[in-house]
Structure formats: structure tokens, C-alpha cells
Image (cartoon, rainbow, N blue to C red; front, side):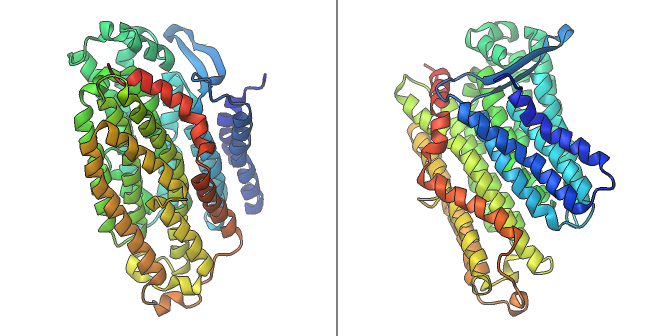
Length: 511
């Protein structure tokens, strides 16, 4: 096709944000309808890309490449592979649903929608850009609307949470920028594909020095730290619970559903292809950090009485499974018997990224509905017997909870099963330790389900407690339907990434 499809995916939401900034006299209904249509453009373009996408092609497709800053050898470079396509589709699903969830926010809906569309476009730019300058602009651009969305529409502690989120992420970005500046000095390019090729043929090691040399170590750790803060990797996670808990519900849905995936994407797009040997050298310490996120994240969630903070720690736990898979593959050595386990672990990580985005967004929405219906309360002790008053709401929330738990037949099971299958074949001790995280996850999610929906009734809370209604169906039902469909037909996603992860495993499992 001749149309710049990837540019349209990225720029339509950003242009929509600018348009809303100009429509100062627009009525709230007009703003909401226009912003929803602009947000849905991502899903429409993503489905078009899906129809014309060839999963057998490992390299980027729909490529757009134009010379931008000649003196710095910087290009406007966009490309889409199976991993990028998954994340574009995830963004196209979660973003409009989060916008619908925001329709009851009375305070300045035009500014909220403009900031949200800007955040959506920035995330899409991260998933599609293949030149560091271009990519980093979107990486940093995402911080600004996220900061204001948390600070202006968040809860009582929103100001502190927003500043903490901004400072942590900006600090990580500074290390990332310095690392890539050193790469540019050494290689003369910031093209991700060229840098990966230089790493494969040994040119990068010849320019930076071998593994363990000061220059190579400095650059690698800078990039690692910048990405670790974003995921976040334990112990760089301390900004996450407050940011997710204080953000308004639609923003929490986007932060956990889409924005948290930017860090995992960065590990796969930047760190692995460019620094495979360095990653292999410190894979065991990184495995322990991932395990800390899996186990301690789950036990921290178990200790929470605030439902929103519980789901925030649950997100740390679930994303740490993805990092566990990545670092287990990076730790692998020996000939090709480990390649099948690596393919399983990597496929599971990508499926987990997508499936967690759906279930976590649904859970944050469920907690938001509980909060709205109870006058702002969201403690686990504030509710009981909600199933009696709102059986449909209870049923939909229950599906999201059991999806997050990894119940067979729902989408959350497939990714976790493949991750554990792969990790058991690569680092059995790590898989064994991670099982403690599975146990704690089951306990806190079942506690949520039992206490809120089946526990002793809290009479004051249930007085006039309505069941799900109106536009709430438009948010909840698509997410739950996808959890069921992708649980029964996981090949719909796996088929998009299997050739890609097979190629990765062949490159990254060291002889």
C-alpha cells in the first residue's frame, strides 16, 4: 500500500489531541464522541495492518524510512513486526475503552481527552519507531500527559504520586539517553536494526570493548536501568503502587494495560538484540530480581487492604513473569536442546503482555465501579455480598479475576503456562521459586473475590448498589469477551509471533 499506515497509527491520536485543544467551545458530548472516534482509529488501522501482515516475515513490515537529521545520521524510521502488532492492537482496544470509562468525569473533559489522546499516540510511537532519536522523543513525550492526568484528576495523594512517577521515569530516561549517546559515538548510528547487526557480527564489541570492559558495562547498565524503571523491575518499582492507585480509573487502565508494556518492549527491542553477551553475563542476578517481583509483588498484594493498590501490586507480579522468561532465556547456555524452551518462554512473555493488558484494565475498572458506587470507598473490608446486589457485575469481575489468576480456558492461562514451561526447561530453580508467587497470587485474588462478592453483607454499602448498566457494558463486555475468546483460541495471537520468537531464540541462546 502507498498510504503511510504506521504514521497514521501514531499521528492521528496526536493530531486529535491538538484538534481538541483548539475546540474551546465544544460541548462535552461532542468532545467525547470525537475523542472516541480518534482513539478508535488505532484499532481500525491495526486491524487493517493485521489483515495484510505476514507472520512468516521476521523483519519489520509497512516500513517508512525518511532521512531526518543528516548530520547525526538520524532517520524517521517506522516498522511493524509481530510484537509491535500485538501492542498496537492492545493499545487500540484498551484506549477507547478507557476513554468511555472517563465519560463520567465532570472536570474539564476536553483537556482530559486531549491529554489522553496525546498519551495514546506517544505509546504507539514507542511501539513503532526503529531509530533511537525518534523512539526516545515518544518515550519522553508519554511522561507529560501521564503526569497531568494523574495530578489533575487523581485522588488525594495524586500530586505526590505524579511527581514520584515523573522523577523516577525521567531519571531512568537520563541513563538511557547517556547509554545511547555513547553507542552513537562508538558506531555512528542510532538505528536499532543496524545496532543489532553490529552486535551480531562482533563490530560493536570491537568498538566498545569485550564483555566486562568499563565502556561496554557502562553503556549496558545505562540502557538496562532506563528500561528497568519503566517496567518496573524490582526494586525500581516503588513509584508504581502510588501512581496506579492515585490515578483516575481510566488512566490506571491505560497505565497498566499499555504503558507498563513499554518497558518490556524496550527489553526486547533494545537490550536483547544490542547487548546479548552482557545480558547473558548478568542473567542470574537479573533472574533473582525478576523473582523478587514475582514473589514479593504477590505477597505485597496479599497485604493490601486498598483494592486499587492490590491490583497495582498484582501488575508488578504479572509483568515480572515476563521478565522472568526473558532473563531465563538470556541465562541459557549449551547447544540447541534449550531452543524449544526458549521459544516457549518468549512466546509466553509476549502473550502475557497482551493478556495482562486486558485483565488488569478490567480489574482496575471493576475497582473504579466499586469506588463510584460506594462514595469513594475501596477498602477490601468496605464491601461484602456484592454478588447479591449486582450479579452481572460480579460475574464479569469474576471472569477478569480468574483470568488474572490463570484459570485454564481464559486468556491468562496460556501465557503463564508457556512461561513456566520454558523457564522449567532453562532454569528449573527459578521456576520452582516462582511457584511461591503463583500461590500468593491465588490467595489474594480469591480473597478479593470472596470478601467483596461473597462475604458478609455490608448493609450500608449495598443500600441502593446498582448492577452494571449503560455504557459500563461497553467497557466491561469487550474485555471479558476477549478473555474468553483468546483463552479458547490462543493461536489467534500465538500465530502472529511464533516465527519471530523462533528467530530470537536462534540468535540469543548462546552456544
